[in-house]
Length: 414
Image (cartoon, rainbow, N blue to C red; front, top):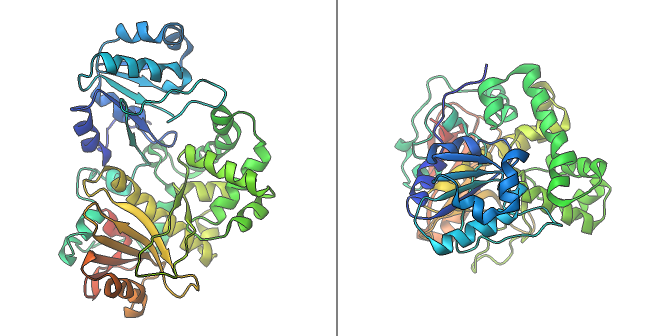
């Protein structure tokens, strides 16, 4: 049975603030993460541009069709009629009243069609999958980055019934697609996710970028999944997929355009000269890793490397919506010395220039040794280092050192 309960998303308050002051907002993100459901709450009328009967008028005369809509209006899947973006731009130029147009869909039309830019007229907001915090009805509460930036261990209460490693793996392979989280389980859930991956490589990429080899796209996405949360060099990825370097770069950009893949860049600092410059690759929803590799909980638990990658990907997926909506405007980086002696999973730079850093460990027993790289960064950059956390699978939060905490994974939502 499909749930009709709306779960508040972290992006809601941010989106509401923008729409109160701006004439047009575009909500982008992966398919099936709830963009339309969220957008409906802000409008008086809805036009589904992916339905031919509705798209006809907008395709024939987009400017005239926009004049006839009841505002505020949602133009859902606008990219099916790419000329709509130009019409919205012209309408905003004539009348820049706030709260007129919400658009959902792709940030750009498929190649081969005329593309329209909304720069200066249409403001972009990105939505990602449902977080555990949102799924338990706490989407309006402060996220982990905001709480960690306060540098206080008391902002992380103890959960009296915490998940164990198996519980965290179950959450990771469940992922963040609302339909899956709220309504499906067992074989139905697995079938939904595997179908998502199949349509991703056979339909979504083709509609976004024209004809491509489904077989090679599937192999390349599998290579990305195997290396999620890793620093594999480019050659490792394209050799595993059996494609050329140029093809690999094109495929990687396609999956990034569809918001199912992200490169997190390397952090740089003038005082640290021996840092790796390459990005760290992530699948944006950990459920897609299990679905693509056709592995279940038992198979993952037998593979320590896969456990670490799944948990790392899951933790970052829980933080990504906060990055998009937080007033702190956090930017994500990773840090690694060229020799690999020091490595930090996430270096989060805030709008005020301060730094929050996170390490992710698939371990329930931590010591000061596990926080040594965070301590090194703290001592290197000084007061800019606000707080660091070692995210772990154990049952409780505790202090590891000056401004460094051990936080259970459940601290992301508890």
